[in-house]
Length: 208
Image 1 (cartoon, rainbow, N blue to C red):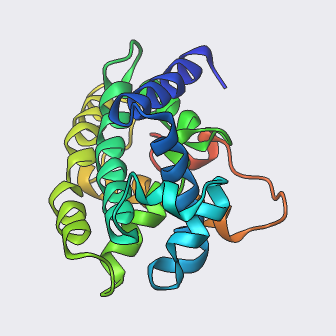
Image 2: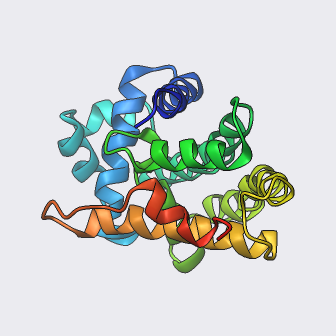
């Protein structure tokens, strides 16, 4: 991973801490993501989240009234984090493709907060009828924000001759599909299988 990618990953972490300044709440949220990812929304109970985080149920209830509220908070954070990550990458020095490469390396890092199953949580909000209505509303409202920052990067890369001449929206959709798919694979795979590098992921986008 390049130094710029590490810098970007640090920004992800700082952004998460800024959105959730309370350490206990961050711990509850991160463990809730794990539990929701494995058990789904319907199968998850507050006691499962509390046990995973090492807290009592009562302690979790001091911060959240229900699992609905926890899930909705996760979706809100995921929606914010998704577009802020792309925005941070777009503001870094370098060519458009170098910026996208840094973003991809930061996403694929094993310790990246941006890869904390956010894409799976967002995916669940669009496929499950059981999730809270407010979570569904937030996800649908914010789902286009990351494209607002990635598409201009792709256009700049096309103008610079780095990125292939194709529909920018199609390239952006393909990119986020790859990232989401890798995030889901990390959850579903128990063995330590090798994951593609940023270079491999971006081959579809590079100009021949």
